[in-house]
Image 1 (tube, rainbow, N blue to C red):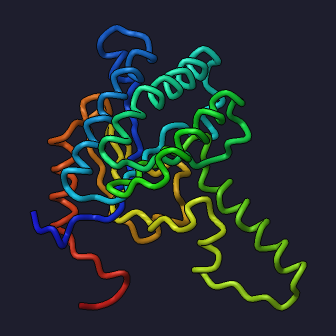
Image 2: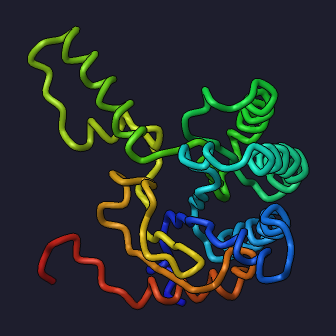
Length: 234
């Protein structure tokens, strides 16, 4: 693959865990546990390919409406996975971040997140971003509130699109070059609405627990075949 066409930032909407489990006569949570292996595989594939940012849509604000038992299992799984992967993060130079409306997360989970984010903050090989309790509309709204506060305090202040971008939770993180969604659904489900304005979309019928290294590399290959023009004529 042409190294000049490797995306800097790949983002994934990880979809299909529940259907994958149901097809096997299991509870939905079984699919979530198997999906962790896909996270590990795609992280390794991203490092091997030279991708610098890998972001994963793990839990939306809308997901809080799911049955409490499933939500609790997901939160416990996230806590366990972060702890279990810490040594791997350090060994492979992976910087770990969590973005979203963290006020809705438990104190214990937030404490673990802060600890791992601080300890991995100097790693430079790959930045792995987990979006938890995230909504694109919420992100834009919280940025708009910040902008309004600045304008109220300093009347006449003008904001460019770049200025506004720095008020989003993804400030200082490049917008995704490639957005992947698994499971066959072809929508972005209130995810990174501002940031994906010029992203390349890649939809695959593969359910997330089956999306491993080769599938990730196929997505990169498809991205490399595309001609990104950003509205211009080449």
